[in-house]
Amino acid sequence: QVQLVESGGGLVQAGGSLRLSCSASGSIFRINTMGWYRQAPGKQRELVATISRDGTPNYADSLKGRFTISRDNAKITVHLQMNSLKFEDTAVYYCNAGIVPGWGLRESNYWGQGTQVTVSS
Image (cartoon, rainbow, N blue to C red):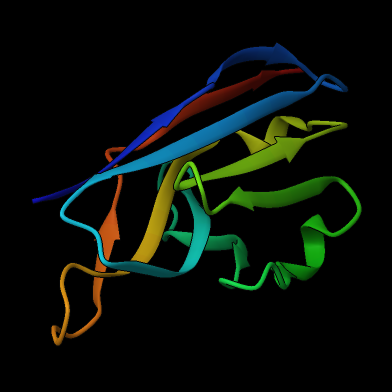
C-alpha cells in the first residue's frame, strides 16, 4: 500500500509564502515523476508543477517565477515553495507521484488527500 501525505497548507495573506511538503510511504520500489496539482472551488484540477526523478522541473506557465518545486529522493519527499501568493492561488493542493511498487511491476499513479491553501486578500 502506497500513501502520499501532504502538509504545510494553511491561511496566508496575499504576498506571503507557504511551503508544502509531501511524503511517500509504503511499498515503493521506485518513484518517477512527482508533482503538485491544485483545484479551486468550481474549477477543474490543474497542473502546478512536476519534477522528474533527475530533478528537472516543469511549471505551469502562469506560476513560473513564484513557485519552486524540489524533491529529496532519499527522503521520498517533494516540496513546493510558494512565494508572492495571490488570492487566486486559493485551492486544495494535491501531491501526485508515479510509483513502481515492486520489482517487475508497472508504474501506477498515486494522489495525496490534498491540503488547503487559502490566501486572504
